[in-house]
Amino acid sequence: MAETPARKAPQVHEARVLRTERITPHMVRLVLGGEGLASFGTDGFTDHYVKVVFPVPGVTYPEPFDMTRIREELPRDQWPSNRTYTVRSWDPVHRELVIDFVVHGDEGLAGPWAARVRPGETVRLLGPGGGYAPDPAADWHLLAGDESALPAIAAALEQMPVGAVVHAFVEISGPEEEQKITTPDGVTVTWLHRGARPCGEPLIAAVRELEFPAGDVHAFVHGEAGAVKELRRYLRLERGIPLTRLSISGYWRLGKSDEAWRAIKREWNAEVEREQEG
Image 1 (tube, one colour):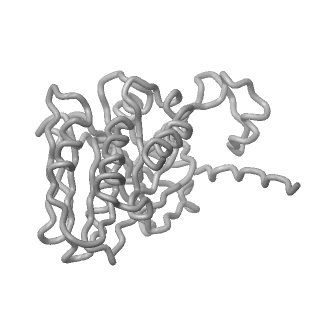
Image 2: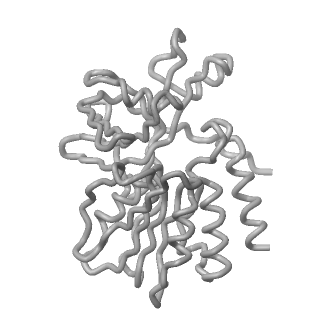
């Protein structure tokens, strides 16, 4: 039996916070740079993501920073936490990496950190990964998600070819969370104000009510896992869109911490596939 190849450790980058900006009441933008990003590179995807590393206070880690060594040499309660965030933009010429963080007061780990971090501080990143970019050959595009998917949707809109037919839906808490996004001529974002309704309800309704154009669609649907599951069922079973034309995944799960969601995400996705393909 052939040996299973060792899993390659993700590349580590040590960046420096250059600037911070509160772009909406609940969205903070960090611009990162520095020599530690000299080897950072992207492959043209609009959903590139990195894992932001959060050390355990008081723990000294090996240098150079190596997650494989950390997991081999330190007890689990001393392993750093990490949170996955979409790359909003990457400028290789000026070596500036932009990441947007959803912030809800002191809730969570990454949001409060992003709200209080200051220029000059350092942050370690793992990655990047990614796998989606709008197919210029598609007849039309569907982009749908909540706040967590907004950076990737915005990046996709900015790379759409002129003349592209796009239906973009972004669910946010209210009008104060709308952002200015550069889009090709004729492309607009439909902002869905959630208000007191359950997360995902406005997004599901908007996609279901859309009159689908004729032709081949390339779709990007990401956000809260429960809403994504419902939309996946609709797009696959009722609309007959093949999986090869769908980038669809739950970025987070209502009622679950990031660690708890990641621990069950793979099996949850497999179960969803069995339900909807069986």
